[in-house]
Length: 94
Image 1 (tube, rainbow, N blue to C red):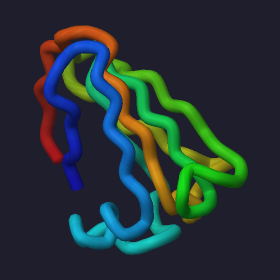
Image 2: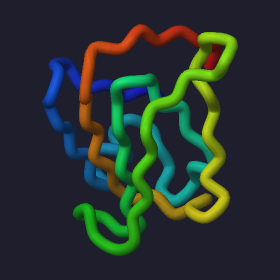
Image 3: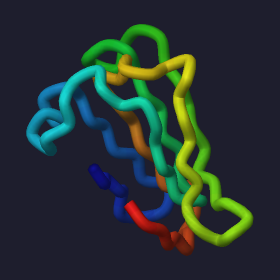
Image 4: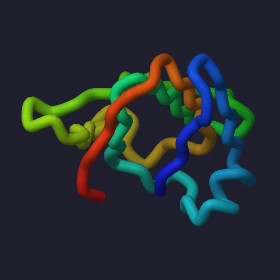
């Protein structure tokens, strides 16, 4: 699944219904790839409630997106907020 915000500083909110419409099954994510310049906050419950995990975009030393495993938040995400902090250059295979 790929969801990106459009402009710098913009925030996009995806509740359970939004994620479901994008074919994201509830509580199934075990890893995430976030481009540099983005921040993603995942919430355990719908409506941006419950415990949360914030992931900063990373690039691996190879220059490709880094797959970040969410050991402490695996299979828990039900809503998400995506913020575009800067204009990134992202490339990768997924």
